[in-house]
Length: 349
Ligand SMILES: [Fe+2]
Image (cartoon, rainbow, N blue to C red; front, side, top):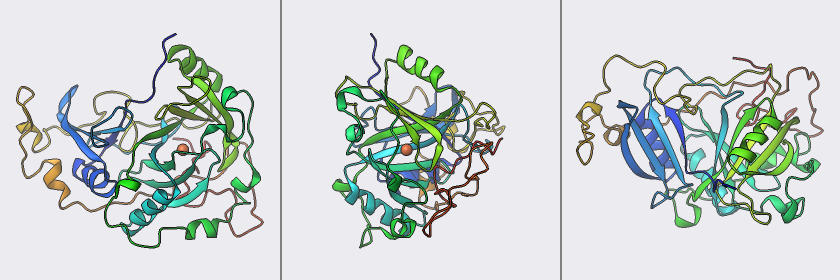
């Protein structure tokens, strides 16, 4: 059977290539491995970021659609993209580096299979930095992943976590440069939404050869099923192969294409009438685009980070009026402003 090895890359829409370049290269330390144009719309930039050699599974790419409307996550779309680091020490260094750069960060949260911090890129895309381990075999045997529903331990759930203690955790010193021991190594997982997990599984398993490796719940909203697929040989799950889905009701909002979301078509839904400055100097037949004062690299030098609004989401699923009241000082469901998985299906587009 044909088996998909894992992610090659994920593409997202950005508003401003210069701002994107500054964030992913200068703050997150990824390498700009390709600066080109969208081959289906050569008047727009297409930037590729990845590890030192641009390895498959490490690549994030961006279409610059300056005039596109903001996107929104929902059914059929991506909720967040997780990037992999070796361990929790590296993760705390990222938390310190990002917060010092003015980027709000939540976590670290113990998810059982990995530990996670969350933040948003300048266009509002939810990003996660996750540790490589301990892996999916922490609550079921490595040779039978995904066979039964795994309920997270209460200590990992809203109302039981010490949110104040979690918020206070960070690296002790400023992190002014990205050192090799904290470098982002690959895409860890990508999480989206489905209103039919069975149909999604049928597609990912039969068509792409992925395997169901975990059946659990959204640990920030345990009423929401959370399913994981990956390239799994019965013993190990390949790096950069985990695709996860929150299952929302059919009536929940659908994703909207636009800035901060993955594109559903190769061309922008709304574009300005003229070519972006600088792009017109690109020659598909030439070896490279000539830089102008408006190319992403030069623009990045004057870019400032923009932090995205985190006011999108009420905490509970539609039809669920109950909230989980904390017995401690934490929020009702872990979905305080900035909580990345506060994505609620009750807020429809
Ligand atoms: Fe995640």
